[in-house]
Image (cartoon, rainbow, N blue to C red; front, side, top):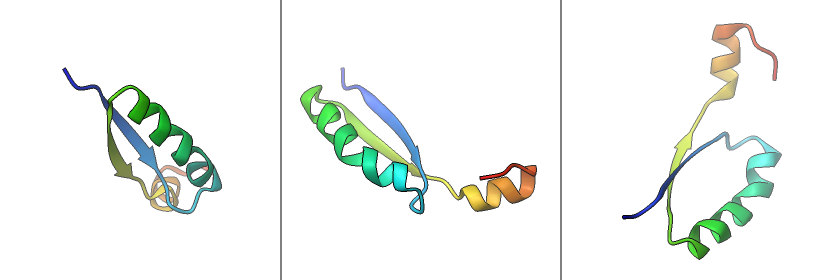
Length: 52
């Protein structure tokens, strides 16, 4: 059975950029598939009143 990782990220986040390579390595080592789920946090924060 293949393991799937749901990976929620925003393209404007430096943390997404910095962590992606490590996540890809871990997934490859464990034969997991990454399901990339882009999120627009600017829109979410605007609608929920949250702060970035």
